[in-house]
Image (cartoon, rainbow over all chains, first blue to last red; front, side):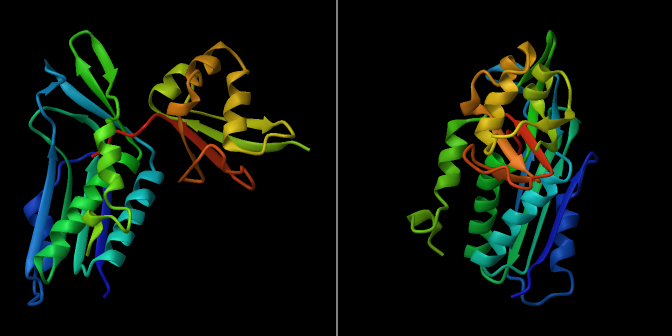
Length: 161
Length: 87
């Protein structure tokens, strides 16, 4: 099926509910909508932070996320997918990024959103800095994220569609 | 015959090298991304610092992820950066 897909990289905040509504408006075949929002926490490694600063690779960020979305649309029957990822300075409580997936039945919507997040965490070219009182520190990538992404290699139980 | 290529650096790789991008003339004999990292490390203190642990450096050729053994081939642009922390 043709999946309507939208990928945006932007500085400005977004509206998850409005983005989800865009994908379902006027349709009678959408039975499931799953949304994920990533939010800036107030602390990193137990220490309070003033803000996050997100750097990205313009051009590659869009291309890489579009590749992930295309793979999700190949693996699951999806009516629509929207991914929006912010960059720049983001304060605790603010949204960082969102994924919405729409399908006729829930398994495709749940699994594709989970898949997209695991891939995005390890392969989308963004880098976070934590703004603390005494300066900025680069956040380190987590081994758990690589392990999570490996779950989706075809042939493994998690990837069963 | 040398090849001119654009290099881009992100996050702490950029900070250590001291610039976000540059055009370089690749000496003959540098065929893979891994060999390029070794050569870059030899260009000066700041490069040696940036590439001191090549195992944690990730690379992209023309905006697609590649492994260290990937050939440079006809690449126009190669980017080097730390493991990603988006999402």
